[in-house]
Image (cartoon, rainbow, N blue to C red):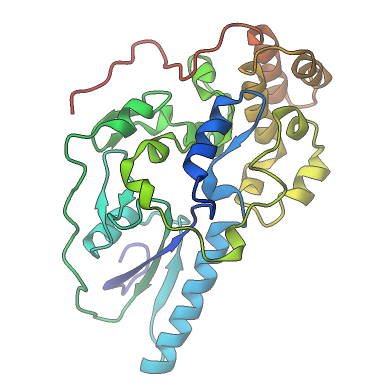
Amino acid sequence: AELVPGTVTAIMVTIDYAPGDPGWLGQAWAALADSERAYVSRYALGRDYQKVVRARLQRLASRIEGGVGAFGYRVFCDSAPVMEVELARRAGLGWRGKHTLLIDSGRGSTFFLGTLYTDLPLAAAAQPGADHCGRCVRCIDACPTGAIVAPYRLDARRCISYLTIELEGAIPEPLRPAIGNRIYGCDDCQLACPWNRWARPAELPDFAVRNGLDSATLVELFGWSAEEFALRMAGSPILRIGHERWLRNLAVALGNAGGGPEVLAALRARSDDPSPLVREHVAWALAHAGRPQPRAGRPPGFSRPDP
């Protein structure tokens, strides 16, 4: 009610986004293991999910209006302070996993959540879903930076999705090696989750891979100009971070890539970039490149909590 006065009901919906290839989990792990390839979270390989989900919710609202008449509503998809996962849990769409994402036993966690706030007094459709994580801690073990500090507790300041997308300034140096080749988001906790063996492939063509982002190299993407970035990322959620943070993320990944001739040449080519943020990360990458890289390094002081 504080966000949308008059709201009494939240209608929760989901849309699947997992890749269509049945071997997508193995392919994702293979991409993460190849330090020269760029890894983009699977949800961001296609069109901007916020626009797609909100547009479909708007059409749903129009259909409801056609049946009941004018009513008050507002649509959301990861676009406002809405407790989407908790609302979806209460709507019976799944349970909250130890990585804090919503899990459905029939399709894992690879789906977007959409919310329709409305002033219609609708009855609850279902009971909250029961927790089926049991003693499993695979998501906690898989987190490269130890951001899942305890079951059902996430320290966003250490989460690679936060660091590569939401954080506007410099990425903390102790966390940079653990980022590996992840340039936009992170899927490790979902890739490790056993329930995602039943992930449903995306039915909407909007979420098909664009611009070869599932196979692009770090050097290739680091060479994009601001104009090329804007052109290629038009309609993508990645566009929101801007070219400067795109280069920041890629510089870190290149610093973790092993220090080959192409990597070093790409970094040196941007050593005098107009952005102080980019220059600082390039300088770190040049100093860091060539050092032995752990497969999934963790920052100092990390220890796995008891399940």
